Image (cartoon, rainbow, N blue to C red; front, top):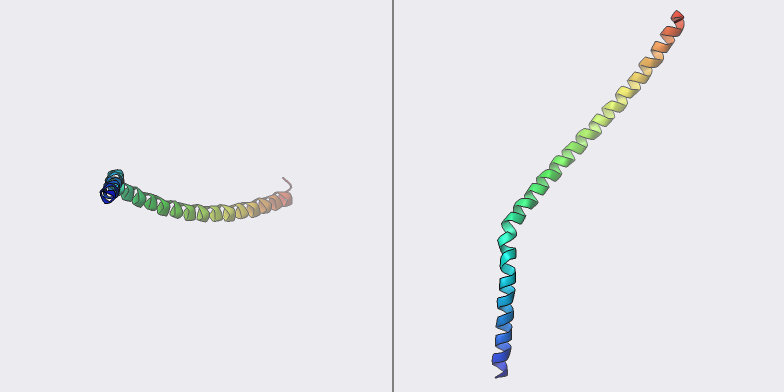
Length: 82
């Protein structure tokens, strides 16, 4: 008698577990697609970060050139008496 009660409780728990697991398993393909999309976006974000760093370096170089040009212009103006 005790065996049947234990067996019924175990079977009931397995049925409840299966019913709870079913919606999760049904969502797995959507979750996988979302994970792939997030990975793609992360790759794109990394590429954009690298591009931004390159542009920052160029901007700093151009700023240095601008400073040099402004100093030269000031020297030329000073020599001309402007």
